Each structure stands twice: as structure tokens, then as C-alpha cells.
Length: 162
Length: 162
Image (cartoon, rainbow over all chains, first blue to last red; front, side):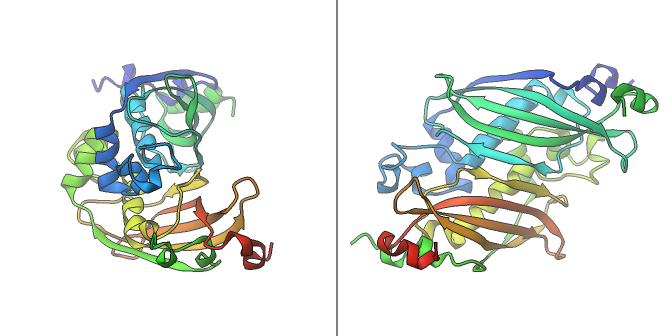
């Protein structure tokens, strides 16, 4: 018994299905710690820097926003799924800054999906993600595919209508 | 004197210009630390896990690869430029796993550029990035725009031929 029958499989990722992410509040210390390691541009490190004037103070690295998205998605559904990872990201848009004390929440929606022809027992699920702040402003959007195992590969064509 | 005359401006980001990144060797401890915070899927946390069997052991989170790219790019040219950040990423492809002990190096190439119509004194520079491992295999590719200040906004149209 692997417990896989309780995990979200490709068959469960029906088009239009949504997963709610967060809430998660982000501190200045977290923003600075990420930036110091990965993206030490002045407006990610020091809200009083000359370069932070045009950003209105300290703002999080865009890669930090993506990484926080991943953490929230893992918590809500990725770790409870038969996902085998993603081949990439089709688009990221950083629309508003993420600032110290902001609270992120979001929604991930299954956009479309297809059974893989080259990888037996797997399918690609295309996710559309939106992250908002506590004011309801959209901070970032993302579109990406993930490879997810089928629960019942023999019924794949019937399941997906392919 | 701001020292800006030594910084890379939009005018310096000529199409085809390249920046060499790295080398940078990545440890298992780094891979696990990033995953524990942002992407705790078993194959990013534990090379002996059942789920790491299909990945051939421990592999880095794709977001870790992107973040390492950013760290390398900051070191080589971003911190020495008049960049004001990026509105997003047009595409990321994770092509091969990044494994413990691998050494990343890469190249960022200016693909195209244009003066902004809505933001005076700024232009968009489109970068194509490639990250390779020590065997010369491509680990990831990325395409993204950055907003970069012009050194001499009055000569923008002559500079760019626009």
C-alpha cells in the first residue's frame, strides 16, 4: 500500500478545478534574507537606498515571489499529488511589488491538460496561478505545465476524451 | 557625482552583447535548504526517497535554479547596471536536473531592445539566458525583459534607430 489512492492524480486535475493558496504574510527580514542570497539589488535589500526611491521602499525579488508561490502550492496540493515536476514556466508577470507585511493569497486553476504520448502513464496539466495581496491587488500571475501521473493509465483515453 | 557614468546603461546593452556567468558549484546542503523553505517535494529534499527514484537522486528545485541564475547575473552585470527590475519572465525551460556537486556556468545575450514609450528615460532589454553544467549540458534556458535607464535620454532615438 503506497497510499497513492488518496493522492491527487491526473484524473483529478479536471479543467477549471481550483486550489486556494495562503494566506501567508511576508516580513522584511524574509525579503532581505532571500535578496542577500539570490538577488542583491538595492531595492530588494534596503528600503532607504537611493535605488529604492523609485520602488517606494523595500520590495521583494520577483524570484522570491515565485518561490513563495511554490511553497504555498506545495502546502495546498502539490505534496498531495502524483506530480513529477515541471518542464518549465510559460509566463510570469510581476504586476505589483510585494512589500514587508503584505499578506499573499492566491488561486491556481487547471487551464487544460493532455495525456503524454512519450511518457506512458503521465499527463501534462497546465496551471494558471494568480497571487494577490491583502488589498486584492494582483501581485503576480504565472502559467506553467506540470507532469502528473495517472491513477489508471489503461483508462486514459476515456478519462480525457483524447 | 553618482558614479552612474561607469554603470551599464540601456545604450550599452547592444543587441548580441553577451555576459558570461559563473562558474558556481552547488552543494547538496544548498539544494536541500532551498527546498525545505520553498519547494519541499521529496526529490528536492531526499535523494533516497521513493519519489527520487525517477529523478536518479536528489535534484534542485527549478525555482532554485532560477534564483541561482539571478545571483550569478547580479554578480556579473546586473548590480553594475542602471536596471530597474523586470516586469516578468517570458519563458523558463528546465531541461536537465541540477544535482549536488554540479558546477553551473552560463551566458546571457541581449536579444533585442526598445525605448519605452510610456516611461521616459527607460528602455526594455530582452535577455536570453542559458545555464550549463560542467559537462556542457544545458540545465535551463530563460527569456526575460528588464527595464534599464538610458544614460542620455535626449539621444534615445538616434541611439536605437527608433
